[in-house]
Length: 262
Image 1 (cartoon, rainbow, N blue to C red):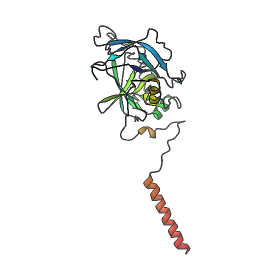
Image 2 (cartoon, one colour; image 1 turned 30 degrees about the vertical axis):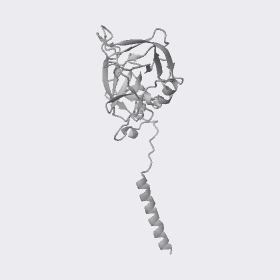
Image 3 (cartoon, rainbow, N blue to C red; image 1 turned 90 degrees about the vertical axis):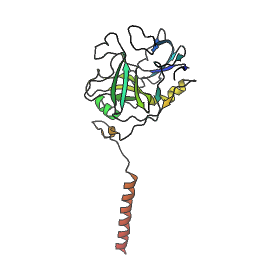
Image 4 (cartoon, rainbow, N blue to C red; image 1 turned 120 degrees about the horizontal axis):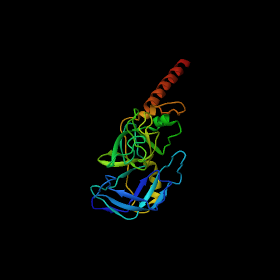
């Protein structure tokens, strides 16, 4: 993508109280201190907040930021694909989160405040609901973290990207939203699930729309077997082969009964 440019729309969260006045976005930034020769800065001209954002539950915690002018893509600044609406993220899928937030609860990022990265596995929504309390995690959210804790996004990372790699392409699956403390056991970080907003994003951007890419998980979804108090059980359909087998046995009994009655 080097050498291209685009009118940039940035996907973010935790921005529902912001106004574009004086707000800037830095791209290609590595450190918050010292020089960043490969960085580019743009002012924000418009913020589009999701109309159904709920500050009490953090549901629909997502917005779009329009930048003042095009940005030249380079080795340090490049676009990311957004997760398409039919994307499926099973528990255990590895994701990466970046930001300049605290490195622990109440522990700020030390000098020279270089961009940090953490790798955390996806936690299924059923499990995440059991962790946070059934009903706390909606379909518009995606969770990631370790049951033992120790790795997580933290205060100051809000609005940052959660990305997953597939076939050599980075796909943004989530946007840092909220959590219980930082890196606590059994409390994974919670992110706005980008794939839920493809239709809304496309409806807000009239030209030069972002690219969406479907992420497909392989194997089985272990989250379906998770249960806890108050969580609705998963009802699975009977495999077609088993249905045919049962029908076959019933038909045999019907024929047998018919023979006996005759």
